[in-house]
Amino acid sequence: MQLLANTTSPYVRIVQIAMIEKGLDPELIIVDPWADDPRLRAANVAMRVPSLILDDGTPLTESILIAQWLEITRPAPEWPSLLGDANHCAGILSRTGVALGGIDASIITLITRKVTAPTLFDDTPIGQRRQRTMIEAMNRVDELFANADIASLTGQAPTLDIISAITLFDYQQFRYGDQPWLPKTPRLRALSEAMCARASVRETLPR
Ligand SMILES: N[C@@H](CCC(=O)N[C@@H](CS)C(=O)NCC(=O)O)C(=O)O
Image (cartoon, rainbow, N blue to C red; front, side):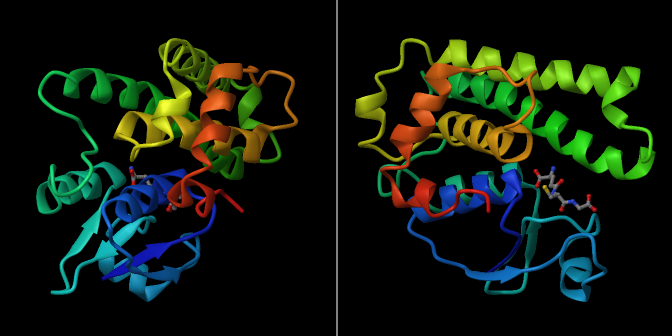
């Protein structure tokens, strides 16, 4: 298996954490998604990372689709579940959606800056809307984990909501850590720092 990836993408990180926790270790192929790399073009019509090429050559794209594939092919109880059981699945998916909304807004902002330069996309009405989404997503995720027992969470493989939450937090620190509008989100910070006890989280920090 080959994972076409880069070292910064939050979508790549979600897949990497999930794969490590599911006991998989794909060959990592670092590509520049902005260059016309033929390997990425062949695997993914959208030319985006992550793209996972299975051993039989089947290409899988879109981080959440890859997570679905992982959940089916490496199911609980043999492997830790990304989505939890029937009672917890809706909550996990709902929290995941909030974090993904923030990640999408973050990436769209970075990408659209390239298009609108030298005007800063952030100053346009849509840019302001995306910035508001980033702020609200971080605050909501912070609130959603207000009652979480962080110490016990580190002892088990993270579900998709936790993977997405810490990926959002770390990516925002990586890209916008110096921005005055970035909310403090102390509970999310504590979750992210505690989860670094796990190799899957620690070894995939954006760099
Ligand atoms: N919806 C996709 C988004 C992937 C994505 O946007 N990846 C970015 C890097 S963070 C990329 O490869 N961008 C290159 C491009 O848009 O051409 C997923 O969940 O995998």
